Image (tube, rainbow, N blue to C red; front, side):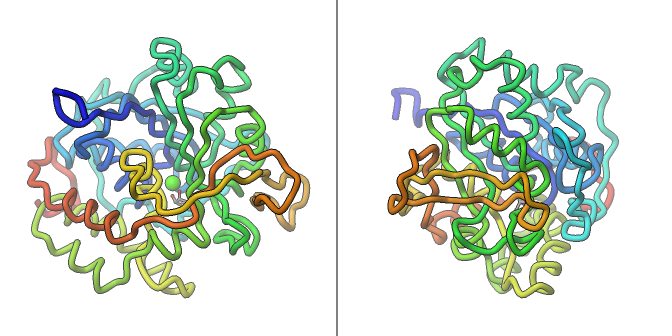
Length: 330
Ligand code: RIB
Ligand code: CA
């Protein structure tokens, strides 16, 4: 706490903005300690320009159009063809659409934005990576000193000796670009924190439908936006046996902003499978039983109740959308 109120946390949000990614963007825009310096776009969930539109709509619905720049980044994985999750998320925004104002999306590439911002503020800015790690890996390849300039790296990805989601072995973000993920885990970043799909999201980042419906009925434009964002994914999750609305991305950012949400974490050696097509993207997470030098802290438990209480507060915020969003009843 400083004399001017809570100490704010500077970060870059690297995202494949669909569904919960956009909820993470809302945390970045509206949480009192969030100091989001840039949104960088990476190929992942849905069409690249759909992702850009989803991010722009999120700034608009929060009435934060000028909050921070959006930078287009890598439009495909380092070596592989892009793999979509449109079956899971639809277009990532429940059919909502908006005209993006001229100049709202920066002409600076996301990788250059990451390198420039961390050069201007060495040691101060964290990366919050909630999509495939292509942009971050490209930044490491382009300038090795990037690793020393980043304060911490919070990654949504992998499973901790658990189930995948796009395959039995792999979580989506690591599956899409396993080479990028392995480059990041080998790069030598000092403070890496990983929020996983299984068990963490499936246990502590999951909102049962009954609770989900209460959030969607809060009566604010943000609550209605949240419903449009998340309904498609909730229906998909329930269809494959996941009993609720999943929020791995917003939980990852919330863990950076509010470390007290992390109830348990341990050091692990994390590596990502790049050779086998059967287990492509599998996250091998070795705990202290094994003689492997740790390269990350994996979150093992989070305070789900406190996290979703923060989400409720966020969605209760009264905002007047800055631009008309087709498909959103304000
Ligand atoms: O596997 C979960 C990740 O992929 C999240 O980042 C979410 O966006 C999903 O598409
Ligand atoms: Ca994501």
